[in-house]
Every structure is written in C-alpha cells, then in structure tokens.
Amino acid sequence: MRIVVFGANGPTGRQVVEQAVEAGHMVTAVTRRPESFPVRGAGVRVAGADVHDPAAVERAVAGQDAVISALGVPYGREPVTVYSAGITHIIRAMHVHGVRRLVCVTSTVLFGTPAPGENFLFRKVLEPSIMRFMGRTVYEDMRRMEEVVRESGLEWTVLRPGGLFDADAVSAYEVGTARLPGRYTARPDLARELLRQAVEERGHVGEFVDVRTTENTPSLLDLMRKEAVSRK
Image (cartoon, rainbow, N blue to C red; front, side, top):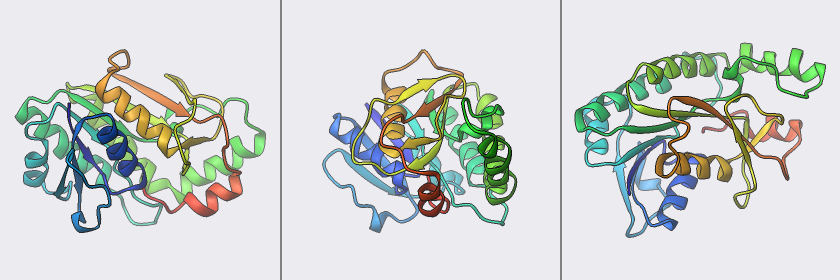
C-alpha cells in the first residue's frame, strides 16, 4: 500500500514510517527538514514540504492510497494554525487526486468528558489548567482541524490519544469511541493504531477513537517534565 505521512519527522511520525516500512508498505515521509530524517530504505521516499504550502502538499499526496497526519507542535503562547491549515491543504489535495482514506491525531481532551476513574485534583485542576493555559492554543487549533475533517466528505478517522510518551515497543493498548480510563498513550501504540486504521480498519470511518496504553506508563510528573513541550 502507498501511504503518505505528514509530520513524519516528529516522534510519532517516525514510528509510523518505521512500522509501515517493516510491514512492507511504500511510504512517502513528508517533513520540512528532509536532510535530518533518520528513516531510510527501499520503501521510503522522503519529501521536503511544509503543510502550509498547498502545491507541495498536493505533490506529496499524488499517487497515494491513504494519508496519515501526525502533525504536532509544542505548547506555547503564540497562535497555532498548523493543524487546521495543514489539514485543509491535505484534504484539498486528497480531493484533487481521488485519495479517500485519512487518519489523523488530536487529543483525548477533545472528547469533552472527564477522565474516567480519575481523582478530583486531576479532573478539576490539573487537566483544565493544561487545556486552558499551557495547551490552549494547541487545543483550539485541534478543534478547528476536527471540524475541517468532519466536513471533508472523506473516509476519515481521528485518533485522540492521551499524554504521549516514548516506549520501546508496541503494547496491548486499548481503543474505544469514548474516552477511556488512563492518562497516557505510548507513541509506538499510537503509531500502530494510525497505521492499522489507514490500512486495515474501516469500522471506525467517521469516528473519533481513543487510544490508551495500560502498562508501563509514566508518572504525571515525568510526563509533564519530559513531554509537555514535545511535538506529536
């Protein structure tokens, strides 16, 4: 299968490319910094492009069977547009080239429901503080992206993981169409589900899907220290 991955040079994007190549797919890895992209091989084509450039996005999408967006930016105070503007250009290119399958990433907090089984401090203080202050501009643009995807007319699925962290391998993670218990999602697990949705799964077309790691997860302090400023 021919798959194009946007945000390929981020921590999750690299995992998607590696897993896709291992599974025998042909991958176009889209990144603004192609010279620094570490995954090489016969199954990988590295394309230098910025998702804010519609012509470059269209060239990357041409000839593909599916699109995966692992776009991500760190928290900050500046307005964020990479999610909504990037997906707008991606969707436009998909319509031009007749590509139907789109899988992308936002966040579990966009379910708009409290984390199941969590304590009062996390539900009422910590998570709202992250949403309203540290990550406000990121989550606002993720919401805009979801609206663009929802109205796209494509065969789309949006994955909404928890707090992302690095791990050595894919685990026995869980998925669901409502917010799941737990705070965290390992990047290998998210990458596996992105690839599975793009290649195998059609039962979640037009749905928002939580992805949750249930073993060997970090502490909240570790996650905030190591991951709060990480890209997707």
